[in-house]
Length: 274
Image 1 (cartoon, rainbow, N blue to C red):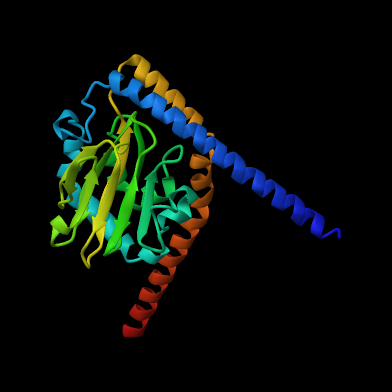
Image 2 (image 1 turned 60 degrees about the horizontal axis):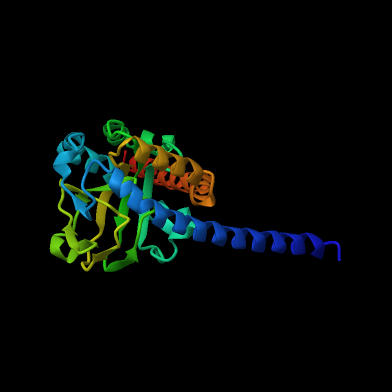
């Protein structure tokens, strides 16, 4: 009987946490809907699904150095099986990320800079430091023949950028719909969009798609910035931020172990051939 008591208590606590998470998510969705109109009116750039990237001069340097970024992530793609799949990082992504079809390599996010991964891609990280009010940055690695269902982002106070790194030979078959606009990735080119518009992704090819994805604050007037930053500060105290942050160390350790095994195998082969 004594052994059953802790299990029973743990079960009650887990059910409480699940119910609390659902309540927080429902409240958050209502708050986001109410905030969207206000932030749109506070915006200093147009409220559109896809924005004119010429409004963001700081992106030029990132686009100009896309080959450097590609060269840094390319060796890590050899260990893609050790890279986390999106839903491993955050259970909130389970509706849009299935099986091992969507891997990620996080540089910034969930409260700050991810030092371990940034050290593996130092030049990319340095370029990202010039993005004003950077919120998140990660490489998004999408498997062949995969569809990401329609979904929406968290807040209109953030804009998202995609830089094409490794794109299938037939790019028209690898695309994203944002609202009523269609975006096609091309290597070395980027675009900016508002992910609070309904959007979905198709990779209808037999090749992998890799993009550098990063978010930055939408340019807004004072009260828009104040409300948005208050919201983000509150969000960082919820499971939406805290769970991925907690999961990252174990996922890092798995990648580090895979890299060390691969290096050890190379050293062994070198010793055998010499």
